[in-house]
Image (cartoon, rainbow, N blue to C red; front, side):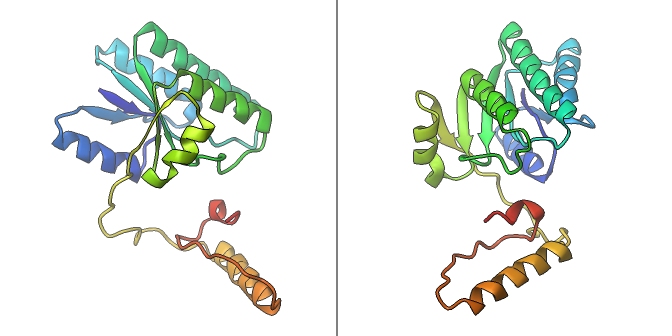
Length: 195
């Protein structure tokens, strides 16, 4: 069984594809990522044969207490994996850095732990493999598509505040004749503003 450390539409799409290959998978159903090791232990106690645990998001918490708990939680997952001979994989959404980093030193510790103990690191696009190989030397790097979501993202509602910030930024850049910029297309979200 492959266990994904995060439940969302992306992990559901991957799970559907794994079913077609007769590969059993699950994704952590915990209220907070700090509880992930307990979900993993629960599966093991129930006799599930977990072969792989997949780290996904390593985003930071704005709470220092929760950020420390994330470090401990991931260290506990690594310990469980070593004890039960579970492979660790990292589906690295953001090759260069996490989307949110409030405590960079803690994020660096988390990233280095996950990199050190992961057998494989996957990018979400094969074009990112060279950059990943540059950053994560001596690791097995490959890509794993997050799949296709039926009806696209039509169920996601636009964030009016973020959209307004983007439109203001575009107007500001247009006012300056010397400005050149590349526009990334995606759904408006707070995490996309840094583009």
